[in-house]
Image 1 (tube, rainbow, N blue to C red):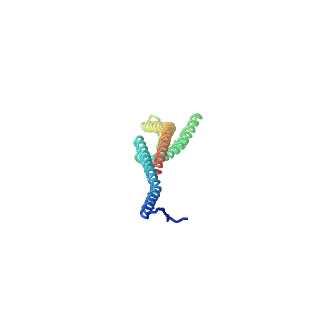
Image 2 (image 1 turned 45 degrees about the vertical axis):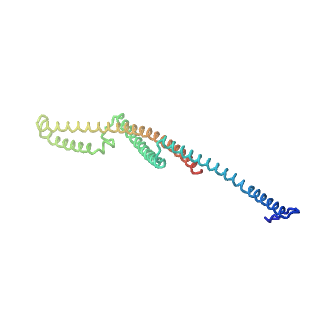
Image 3 (image 1 turned 180 degrees about the horizontal axis):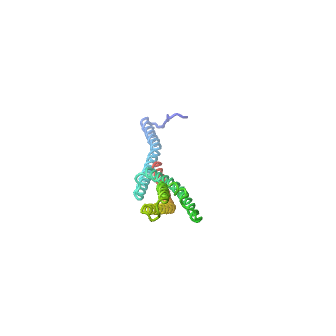
Length: 233
């Protein structure tokens, strides 16, 4: 039943004819059986060849699309470029945070200065003026000159050359003090304006960098899809 042995018999009055016919049937059976085995194999081989050619063409097409896209976008190493631009984005973000804080501080000082000016109080008591080393040195010079003038005034008239010299030096020192205070005041106002301008520039630069990074991520994703197509083939 599962045996591969086939019995063939042929009846004839002539033993030679019987043997010849039996052998012919055997040969025909063997040829037919062999054809039944080999034909499907040939068909399978033809099908596999066709599939292989199709896959080879698909691979070449996928590789071509990947290469064309990289050349079109000028991409040499998408991961390296993306990492570089991401680092730049983080750096700009940190710079913007620092600039925003600097702007807030500068605007606060500018507001305090304006409030003091509006009140009519002396700017010498304003912290940034009071702590300024140049202002402190000029004020010390003025105190010394004022002390010397008091000493001279008790013995000398106001028209005395020494008194005139002291008065001249005092006026010059007070003029320097006024000019220095004005310079500090201008510096506070300018610092607020410059800080706001830098913050604005960084905001725009950060927006451009975000757009660039998003574009690179899209390119990276596109390349990843194309690479997966190549790897899956």
